[in-house]
Image (tube, rainbow, N blue to C red; front, side, top):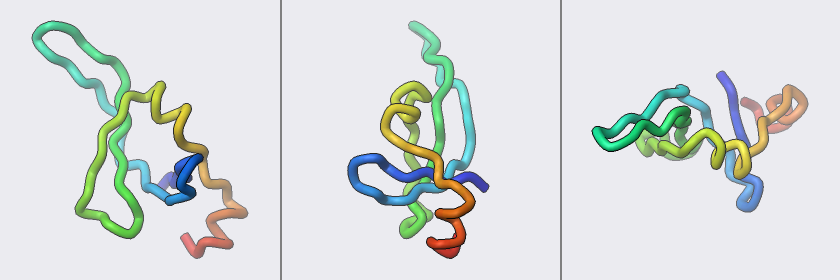
Length: 68
């Protein structure tokens, strides 16, 4: 499992999947599917580029400190 921290809020999210979003008009390559740790029934989708600019990966040191 991979965890990410929202840069502005500090909230932790779990990465669920990488996917491709397509519509009949155009294809948007690379989206990320993720959920907050405290509300697992909430699922979000964000373009990969935007996700990478908004979140940072939680390191193994952070995992131990956060009990992940």
